Amino acid sequence: MEAQYIIDAAFGIIAFFAAWVLKRVYVSIDDLWKKHDETAQRITQLAIELPKQYVTKSDLNQGLNAVHERFDKLEVKIDRFTGAG
Image 1 (cartoon, helix red, strand yellow):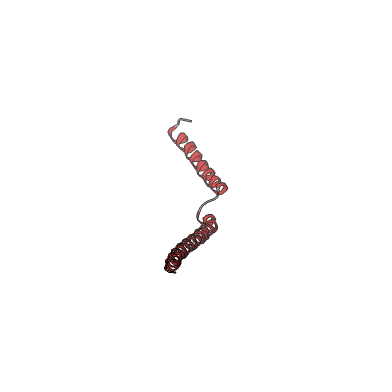
Image 2: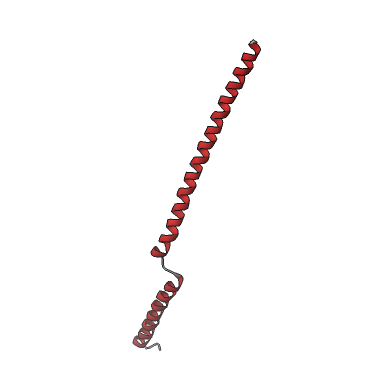
């Protein structure tokens, strides 16, 4: 009968540690899901905020074209002033 108590105690200890490991795994997975949700929320927020903070390609091209036109006008004026043209 004593051998049965030893086997029962061993199974009890094994079950305790197995339950403890499963709990740790569950908590770790839960933490990973929380981090995933936070990251997904930050990416979504970034996708919403990004167009507000940065210029689009077409707007940049329009701005650069305006700057180039002004530089072209300045070149013409400098050429007229120096007599190179």
